[in-house]
Length: 229
Image (cartoon, rainbow, N blue to C red; front, side):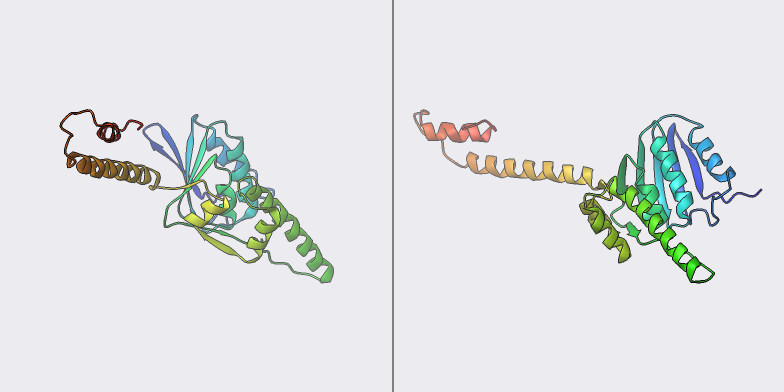
């Protein structure tokens, strides 16, 4: 039996990296125990934390559910990093991350589930009811992480919403933006250093009083050295 393998575990000096690229299983996993079993086998073939890189337009919602469950059950920390797009079913997988980080140029897309149905009106109604239930399940995964009400998640799915990294963090679908935290820390330290340098430069220009006992000068000296005045 052939297997459509859309994931790849990469060895990287002891760090476990899982890359999920392309469409998620173009065939349904109903009745197919090989594909989910193979994924779980590879996931549990090692120990420790796992980093999952996602660049996927989505695909089979049932396959995504299997990946989501396997990652949520994994005993190590699961860090999800989106470097391209996590759309549709791939966004469900992203919700399995203990921490979800997005590249500043990546995107997340959520929308209602879709299917192809053939038959009479009764079959169409059954398909509609099934899609409604699937949507509720998808909302369940988003609701575990997002900071917005369930009804708002449903509305965003109705509108087929696309989020850039900042928007995804704002709504709670992601926890942070890649490459920005260190830069923000460095900038804060640079600003602090710059302000101190300006303050010290100005204080150095103030002439010292002759008797050396002026209280005002003492306060400025304390400020110069970063102490409370």
